[in-house]
Length: 165
Image 1 (cartoon, rainbow, N blue to C red):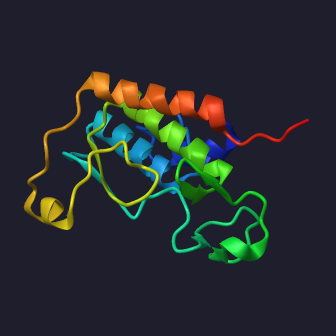
Image 2 (image 1 turned 180 degrees about the vertical axis):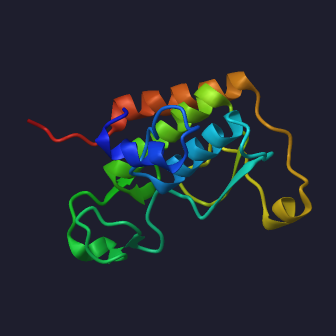
């Protein structure tokens, strides 16, 4: 959890306590850092709004290929890790990133909203008008957040793509 790849996060600010749990995912890392900075008193904020964070493909394209190649790859490139799962085109990394994000949400109850149209449908949905005017819908209660994490965990346990031996 706090491997050598997280040492740089500790050097960023000596007040950060620990490491960044999901360093490989930009969205999760940003949420973790914002939460740490708020807890340390260095940052004040009311909400986290995801814009374009869908953890999946879009129009037949993958945003971050695993092989470090082009920024965009099409679904027909023959990559076996490009899968249709839970109604979306995605890959196993993104399924895990979502699980880690939902676990962090259940642990912290961070006020996360989504202005995205993908895999992150558990979060309260907002529009640009909500974000611009600051008029957000009522936030979810702890029991709802925990239930959404448990439901996703159960879905992963039942359907997560695994290689058969």
